[in-house]
Image 1: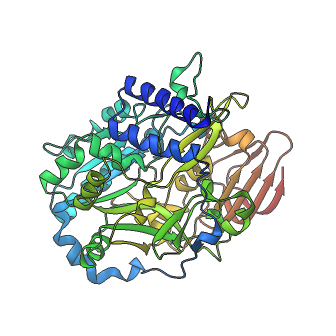
Image 2 (image 1 turned 180 degrees about the vertical axis):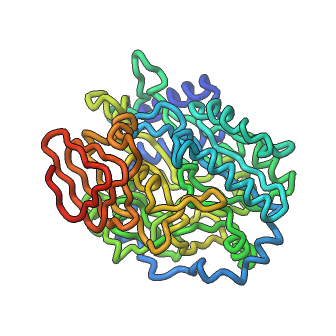
Length: 469
């Protein structure tokens, strides 16, 4: 069969599967676009020759003059949190945001407190909406039932992101698992926000209610809150899309960065978009200074117009993620997940910009390394529910825990039975081996702890430098 007919046949198989699963027409059209790009040989790369570094950005720490402008439009603002993650990299099988962060307070508890605190400050009912996955929706709805005052009339507290089929790397056909059919599906990346919010009807509901601006961030980033000064800057400069970027440090070198296309438009380059031979320059924080915090500000009427022009989805760059069909089985078939990144929409909005924000607006938890950091005194819990770097710190401690011991949350918890060590004065912590910590332990400066056998650190110990246990 000719190659073009094979591609057509494969597309038809994908479309049939998605229709049978009840996937919306715009989500199917979006997947079709990315699959056609894949079949056309597109690897989703954005090479160095096609971009330029960004030397400087407007600094939000100078935006005090915009505070009043932001306050004046808070009644037309909403908060959207991306809440589809399960934390599978830590061995979780339910929403990561139900994990305790400080004492018994979970991510969701703190998000609820952030929004309720903001409402009290500005005297207006700012909506909170979660973009859930089908695996996080029910549990998180039950958790938020503890905060009935969050509910806003005529608006739901959440909507569902879409699901798309995984693609077999060998043959580019739909991936299937004999015993676990759900493993044949994956979320299409957080760029699906735009398709899902339109398809759910929520975008139209929000606009009808008078919501004009939305602040969007990851639910696991507890430093991100709706800031009137940032909103005021957006309004004063008549922007329809604004991305928050922060200074890259060595801890961020493997993450995506902000750049400029040759035609002058801003763009994001994620690690999956970097050719292998360019990894070193991709990770050069002295060349590419800013990373995407995934905190976005969106003018909803403009988004609605762009979605209607493109049939209910945005033609974002394709990101190809290569994984195993069963993430827990390295011998399972290799698959391609066709994803999009919501920040890449910065290239599509007519009046888009990026601004530099301080590190305190970026405190995400992607793994147990991050969790140890935010639970420690390297971060403070602010009165309005944000987790921010402690006073005197401009960067988080770089933490590298032995993955064979600390990667899964249950094993991680066993090693800190009496609380998290003090990391307030820690620059870097690396642990190699199986080490359990007592209470009142302090880690200072650059520390490496090594243990060939199971070991423990006594209560009240102060650790500096390299230690063999």
